Amino acid sequence: MPSADRFPSAQVLNIQEELFLIDCGEATQNRLFEHRTHWNRITYILISHMHGDHVFGLPGLITTFCHLGRQEPLILVGPEGLEEFLNASIQYSHSHLTFEIKYIKVNHLNSECIFDDGELVIQTIPLNHRVPTVGYLFKVNMITRKLNLDKMESLSIPVHEFKKITQGEDIADKEGTVYHAEDLSTVESWHCSYAYCSDTKYNEAIIPLIDQVDVLYHETTYLNELADKAEATGHATAYQAATLALKARVGALVTGHYSSRYKSLYPLLEECKTIFENTILGKEGLKIDIAELKKTSKLKT
Image (cartoon, rainbow, N blue to C red; front, side):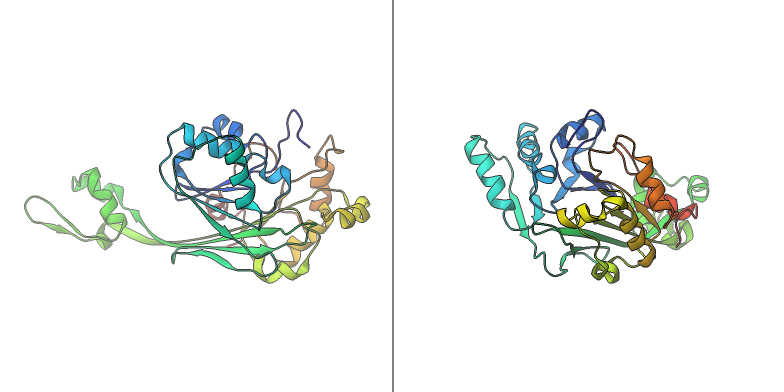
């Protein structure tokens, strides 16, 4: 349940300034406004399952996209029922779309690849909840170039040529002098991975999929003293999430999806840390730079 300082599930993943919205609980669009999110950069919305705390914000967000004059297509990914739910909301609220929505219906029983352009791969993670539910695994493997700005400044190379160099292209000045990309930049590999596991029981079957991911978000609805309740409701405890993180050898664990019975979240964090030290308390407004964490050795490479 939402409260004054807690909101239903929604996360934004930024990959090279392309935004992926993962789940869309009630008031998601208010949070996007609050954090000055660039709405037009949201290209995918990925829904884990059809429970209201993960999807009730979607009709309002889609309507606001229309009010903002969106023209770019939007890709909606999720389990069975997502398209019917949104179509009914649009129809009976007499809303009118200004852009195309493309749907990708996922199978909650098996992992499947829903996107692969050679640099970014998105896979589903079968989860074990009371209704068909999937998590999402993002793997980024990009080759980029770091510019030698001092050398470029000494050669008076104009800023508008920078992009060509980062793409590995050679450039020439007005006199015909050619400057080679390898002389003005160095090649760097950028490898990052993120796994989003929303509502689910403890499930070791997903370990091969999330093995050694840089950051794992896994629900921690209850303390382990309520393990029986977690089992009955299709959820996980903090202890169980940390155990999974340890066995999967992940870089860091992010907690979330807390029962409203907990006024303080720190007991959940401490329970995780008894098993898996590198645990981050997930809370509203938290920002994690995965690449920066890896650079500063706070995550294993």
